[in-house]
Image 1 (cartoon, one colour):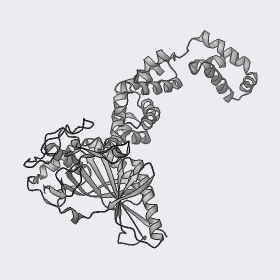
Image 2 (cartoon, rainbow, N blue to C red; image 1 turned 180 degrees about the vertical axis):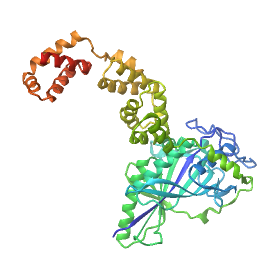
Image 3 (cartoon, rainbow, N blue to C red; image 1 turned 90 degrees about the vertical axis):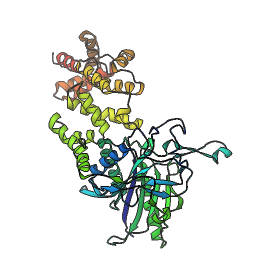
Amino acid sequence: MKYEVVIGLEVHVELLTECKLFCSCPNRFASEPNVNTCPVCLGFPGAMPQMNRESLQQALTASVALNCEVALYSYFDRKNYFYPDMPKGYQISQYYIPLGSKGFLEIEDDQGSLKKVGIGRVHMEEDAGKLVHEAGGEAAARSSMVDYNRAGVPLIEIVTEPDLRSSEEARRYLEKLKSIMQYAGVSDCKMEEGSLRCDANVSLRIPGDQAFGIKTELKNMNSFRAVEKSLDHEIKRQVEILNSGEKVATQTLRWDEDKQETIVMRVKLEADDYRCFADPELAPIELTAEEVEQALQNLPEMAEERAHRFVEEYGLPEYDAGVLTASRCMADYFESCLTLYNKPKEVSNWVMGEFSAHLKNAGLEADQAFFRPEDMAELLKMIDEQVISGKIAKKVLDKAFESGKKPRQVVEEEGLLQISDQSELEAIVDQVIAENPDTVESYRGGKSKALGHMVGQVMKATRGKANPQLVNELLVKKIDG
């Protein structure tokens, strides 16, 4: 039977603040366990929380960037549940009145049309700690430790309406959301560090039905690819259950990357199970209409605007501009290169091509790579100066990207200088002509591709180091007499 897929996403985005949400402990990744803690974020009796105003400003920026209506009056609630990484026995969140609501962002649907995905709420909350599960022997495998460094880190949770209809749409939504959050400057959205985490609610229904089917919740998805794969797996699992005449159980599942399947964790909790009530220790949040308008006016240039500017200012094709601006880090990298080497199309080709491929293989963002904008500029200048060929430049980028060495240093150490000495090349050209009489005759007979074959032979003999323009000139001169 054919079913309609209904997906809603809950995305937790870690804010780029110096301090945690309710205390002055550092908001810092990869510190020694339990050093960024204090009585407030550890939930000690009598410790009084106080809201970090910077967190509110960033949450407000995110809300207006997502076209939300902003609540001028809101407050924090206590969401009560027990888990070892929750030292207070409750999480401070916004349940009854979120900061932002009724927003949207636009993506391309599966038919290639523009689609609005509704954002039901954007609310502030504190993060929990982190459980570290010991690997190794039998006893160690049964033990876990708790790192509370992350407890109290400021988050916004962004909850969509159930508007997504496939795993591909879910991935496109996440890519667009990540871009908006990065451009707005509120989060680095590094999934590998946990600063962007996604849960998904999935259900199926007969096309045309208004009522939703029974949903399950997916957790533990640490990449966009994992989101897509786990949704596909869960959709297939639910189809099999419904086709067998059984009912889908309301469950929370996690994605197991090793087994490539979803695994049941527990029965899914409902809102009433959390017994939410207003936090008595925190004052309400009160904003003015002027503050909301100012946040809207202060939004930085977003991806679509930047892409349009790249077309107008640099003369780039729309495709190039779209690819470069999809990530703020990549767009920043591109423009930094232009300040040192002002040839937009050449820079665009290298950034989108070789450089992007290396980033993807290494799982890095542009600002994390050893190969900096000044290195890209140096590489392209060496091509212009005929120090190296374009083909050799790709090898230089490979080695420089991995080692962190400067391109010119790689060229000198690897002996990759381009051969532009005419007398040196003439001997090799003469040899290629002598060894390929049939190809020479084909060229003389009007087959221009034959010349390309001989150029290739010279490049092969020189391990790609010959100046290709000079090789062309020498071949034509010698063959045509």
